[in-house]
Length: 113
Image (cartoon, rainbow, N blue to C red; front, side):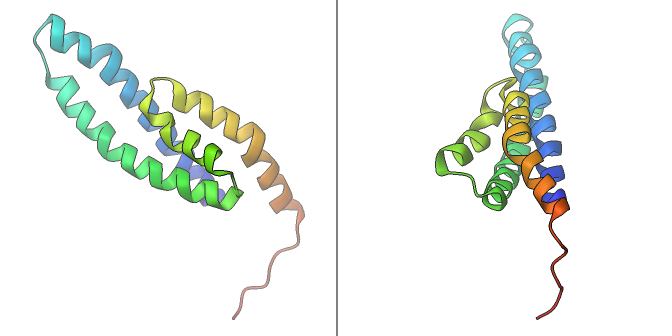
């Protein structure tokens, strides 16, 4: 569970920062100064990493047994600037922290066949 949470958080923050850069730096520079470099390149990187973010969010949502609506909210958070930060905090407080606390108090499961 810890690895899934870490992957989700890292991609949430990276995706969130990149979409902020694209929307608040790249798009204005593209239209005001006719400099599409940031918008094109950072936007492409954001799009690629967003696909990975969606996969990691889905995996974590399955491990947390979230509803379909909660899963969709987590997966779509990377499309709105600042939303990934808000949804990551919401998911951490409501689902991730309780699941990690329950995992820490439960006895270890035997590894075997």
